[in-house]
Amino acid sequence: MSSTVTKGALPPRLILLPFPAIVLGALTTRRIDVPLSALAINGVAALLGAAVGRRPSTSLLRAAVPIAVVAILLTATTLLFPGLDRIHRWLALGPIRLHASSVLIPWVLLGMSAALRVHFAIAVALAVVLSAIHAAQPDAGQATAFALAASLLLARAHATSWLLRALNCAAVLGISATAWLRPDPLDPVDHVERIFQLAFRWSPLIGLIAGLALALLLVPGTTGITRALTAEHDDALLSLSASFVLYFAAAFAVTELGHFPVPVMGTGAGHVLGWYSASGILAALVWPRDTRVPIVART
Image 1 (cartoon, one colour):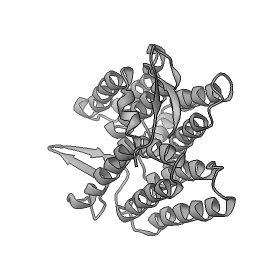
Image 2: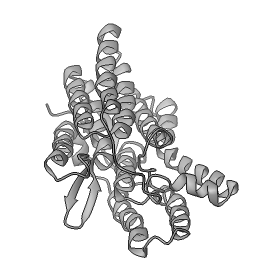
Image 3: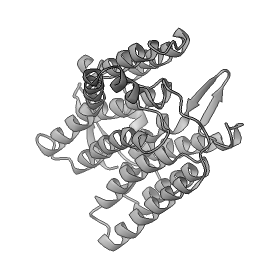
């Protein structure tokens, strides 16, 4: 990704954006007598994510493509861990199961964005391999959300012919679609996959507030889009910001189609850490500090 970016830190007001959804999820969860230890997961993840997102490292952005490769390899290792009813989506860290894809997808999207400036084929390879892993796990929710975001990036690679872009977008979407054909025998967990429905069951007003709290998660991405369209006129920033917005919006939308974790509001550290990863990346690209550094894809 050949671009000039500004080393920055996520503004404090944005660091707090996930907390309304986290708190509302905890209050809703307490109504069904979930242990306090489960409620603490998202809070701890938010504190960890805020510490990382507040001081993003531009050196990580310079190595965007290698980091994306590592992220894909880590996601692939889920296939080596014992699954739940033949479902392999988690990294087992002692007693903790971490939903790997939701943590790592922002780094893969960043790597694709970097690669698109110099090697379209590398960006396609990143998207195809991760989509195939999602299909193998299987994880139709993450497969769909990632494929849509990745296809947006590929479609906006204007230096490549429209036919090549269309064919590769179709390939990524097609591979991801096969995840829906795999059986998913896991039952939904109320405080993970059904938390949004529980909020509406508590009160339609609470459900509406929950929807607004989840919409706040899109603010960093929409801010990046606005900055790219106005002050920066940066097409790479526009594409990456839009892909983050589409990914998180789709990650929520698929929860209405199947038993998939509700981002940030549902119990689980993965989406919380993933949101702070994406926001930290955008902070390094959008919010200024002192030093401007070029980001170049290493391939």
